[in-house]
Figure 1 (cartoon, helix red, strand yellow):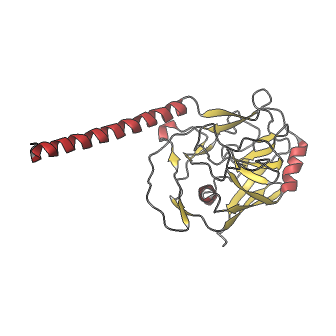
Figure 2 (cartoon, one colour):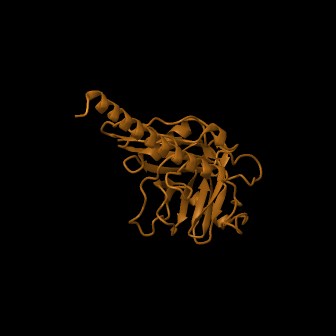
Length: 277
């Protein structure tokens, strides 16, 4: 019969083998994410004939602690410091437990006037939490909406904190925070998935790559339902339509369609209200 000591040794070996397998799996995942990051700071995302420029960042291990009622667990995948770009703006991380009940009002104070949107936390608890955190750190202040698309899609894209100052740079549209998170509230059953009046999140082709960039839809747009619908515009749609009517410089015409808006839109400040029941 097997002795107690032999059984203990066998159990210890089994535990060690499991730990080694788990470590190897995590290392493979880390190498895969680093390879994605190393391929370049900006990814070209082709969606319905449009290319979105966003920053490519890595992944972190997550805490899966149970959350109390009325809250959601939000996972923020942070890139290693040595793999961030000059367009990355590090303002820390939001908390992992976030409310999923109530509504907030997003106010985008622009040089052309205020644009507001209603955000339902039951649909987008983590996206709302990210915006609340970033807004509290003045993340969006003085940044420009860097892309306008008028052909096929009708969207104005904003949210790159590095798109500031006079003129345009090739890197405009590649900036964001040092973390990424999962998509929420995908309009898989909606037709069109992105109707006029919604505000949604830009992302890369990789799942879980939502950051800070967002787009306001000023005309029904046939995008694949892969982008978080954050909320609904309640004021200022006339401003966005004026920007759309003014057109763009076709700067992305060869690779993406659209360009920088001819009517400049500067976000003086973006704020998120207290949660309303």
